[in-house]
Length: 309
Image 1 (cartoon, helix red, strand yellow):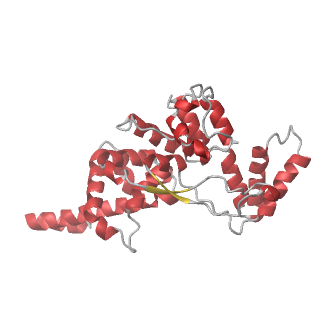
Image 2 (tube, helix red, strand yellow):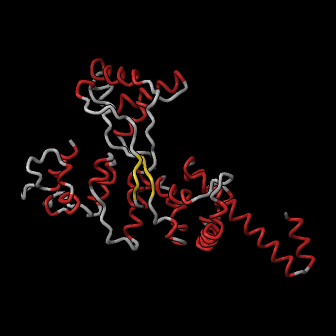
Image 3 (cartoon, one colour):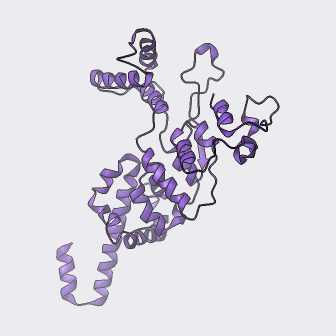
């Protein structure tokens, strides 16, 4: 390509130069978008080391971000085919995976590519770990939800697939913890399952789906920091009037979002639950309310505690 560029320059032909520059621009933008399309499978640190994306973290990041988003809008009808991995999902994945440093320049270049409905995998309780005699549902498949940009940021992208998993290892691990473990050497189920995950990985070279899933319910996911940065950024931009439904992180077990809402004063735990819009509109979901109405003196903290149980 360098030889062609040299020949074009020597020709001193404006039309030839224009055609070559157009081809070069097309190739560069397509390669950059293709690199970003790997966001779903890669860590941000890995993506940022890709030479194709170096332009998005330099001084001219905004210029190149505008080039890329304009290129995508011009060619999306041709790129979104079976021969290309570049699609609207390419930009949505940046949000769901918490890739803040790549998200920010592209979002500022074209917000419309992000402000569309996303799909996300539900992380609501499917009674995977309940005693069999207490089970009220036989459904174990995660529901696919349609969410906005804020919901996608809160839920992230961690599909649950427990089909064919070795549930026995998980049951034995929990049983052994409560029956045999010493409180000093193994103080919590989180500690026990973390050690169990490491043992299974070393012994069998694989990862147990149930152990991994249960650990995700006990601790924050690895990409939470990036998702929180994106959520904070969005709320500080033009979405300052946006309201986050407190029941979304509660139902889908994303406690980091609840902590974030409290820390940023988006949620007042000491306030009256009846005056919290999202709680008042969803009283029918609360099985602990006999009358279907929130008591006038119940605080948000109390209401959420009952709802969580």
